[in-house]
Image (cartoon, rainbow, N blue to C red; front, side, top):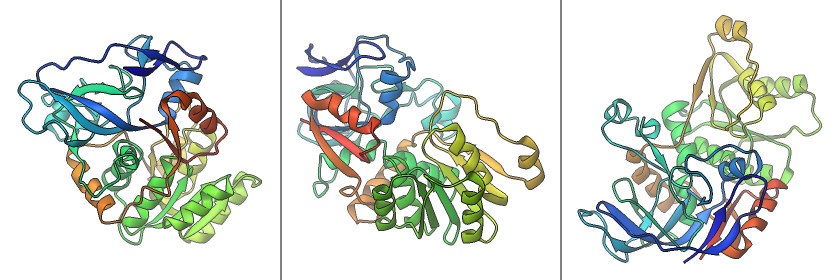
Length: 342
């Protein structure tokens, strides 16, 4: 089969012929229909963040596809079933799994990190946490539910706990942030979207943002003043979906006393946070990682009935041979979510 192989940081992925995986007990082989291009992969490629499996390996953790083969002891899937593959597989027996926190499983395995991923014609995965895709959802665009939709859902519902009427300021309208916006709006939040690219802010408005702010030419104090004016003293909740130390500080400063900041964007840099401000204003800071398996059926249903939209978010499609072009577009900040199609 063909795959885009990662040989190490600061070099393009290489299209190569590799052996098609052989399934073991409890696993399914999936013919990939599409796989989302995620900023996490760019951290491996551009920033030297190490993968658990040493290169050469196959990246890609946001796929949908068709079941091609079923291993022994698999009862929930059959050949030709449409399937959504989650980015992370849980063990089911560690303390966090037993508490219903499978997204932070102590023995988690991440697709395209611990194991070969889905920038390939086929991938094999544990069947336990995979999800059935309804026939009335587009199989290619639905790939982004695996991460770009589910990660914001977990952040909005389970971590930030957005309630109807809450003011929510979201920093970053990229592939994850834009879905934080539409999920927070679907939850009843009054959303302010902050970015530096006008067309991304236009999509944010279309997907439910009440206000948009282009911060490209703004001083930090002016930005925070505008947010406080719009919210009557500060947002109930801020969510940072970029992973930029500067915007993390700004986002955590944009909440009112007693407010909550939720961190979704990843950075490997240290971030200076004013501990005195956190203490004196009783501001909560919460991290958010991935999504629990139990939430996927609800997310898929929200997409099916139109509460969450896929088509406006999938802005570009590339063939596997064009995968490096997809990453270049992401580097330029010109895409929301690109997908690799097969």
